[in-house]
Image 1 (cartoon, one colour):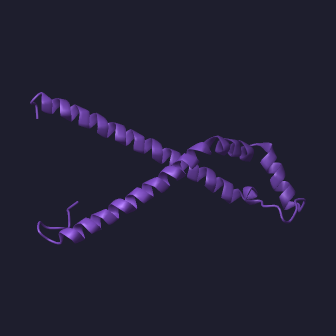
Image 2: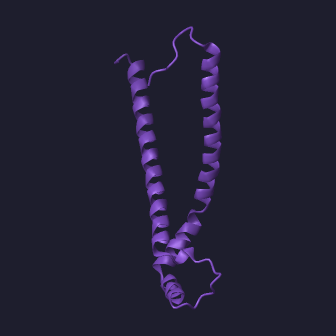
Image 3: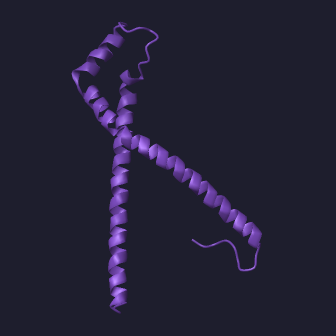
Length: 124
């Protein structure tokens, strides 16, 4: 990626531009940290939810809803087949993405360390 500023051009504007990016990124990372911690903390409950969906109680509760046996004011998003399936799929997708990211970072770290050793040995 190239830097869009040339030497001597708009120093103040350049600093303001990059300060804005810096601040936005700090805010985004703080938001991400909070969301990530919440997501991690909810994984045991997510496992419980998956067990509920896969077990007999969800099927019984779904049938009761279809038969009109549940109070009308009861929130029942959990009984939406598509909703819970999509939630589980999204959670699994994020778990997979995190595993891939960690593996990629480990590979990059290994490459960097090996490269540093070769440089120190004068081989590159």
